Length: 75
Image (tube, rainbow, N blue to C red; front, top):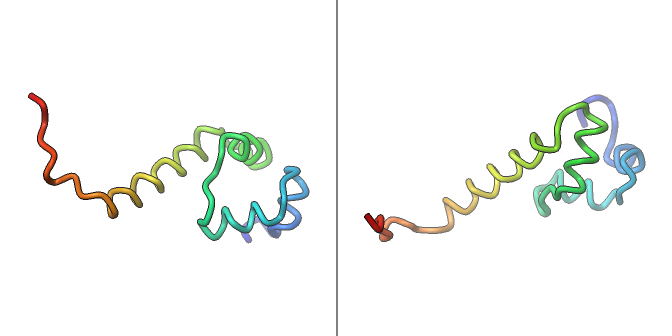
């Protein structure tokens, strides 16, 4: 893991389960507002940074799975 800290140490530091950090890293669960606040604090970023990454990931995934080509504008 970057910065020389493993999932276990990061989890302890931000007071969440190691399993949660591992699932976030694997992409099997998203970053919640709670985790965004914790990550922002420990990594000197903002919660918005983490939530924007999550939103972009979700939108990219959805755009591959959902066909909107048949939807026309109302006006």
